[in-house]
Amino acid sequence: QVILAESGGGSVQDGGSLTLSCTASGDTISSYCMGWFRQAPGMEREAVAAIYVDGRNSRAEPVNGRFTISRDNAKNTVYLQMNSLKVEDTAMYYCAADGPPSPRCSRWWEEKSFADWGQGTQVTVSS
Image (cartoon, rainbow, N blue to C red; front, side, top):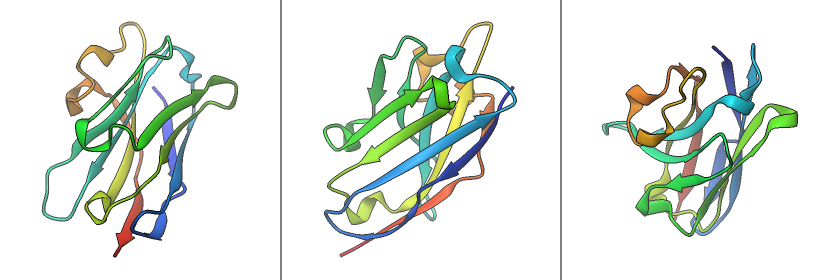
């Protein structure tokens, strides 16, 4: 089990960029599947991206080509680089993790694949 803390959210204009960070404590994330989800007001939480233990990653279609997920195991941190932000990217962004013995990255788009969650960081994009 890990404790996750997101940071880096804020307000930007349409077309701008932000980088979110998710720092873990309580365990090392090198053997964890890590993911980012988001939830807009009045909407269900949706998967954004995930990064596997071996570094492979997946992204949801709405963010493909604009968002990049990466991990720095030495810093126990996962990042979400967000470029070309759109108003519809406005949401609370959550970091999630699933660890040993069998991280469930194979179904990364499902909330139930992740056991540990952060408190979220708000991203607001204005036109």
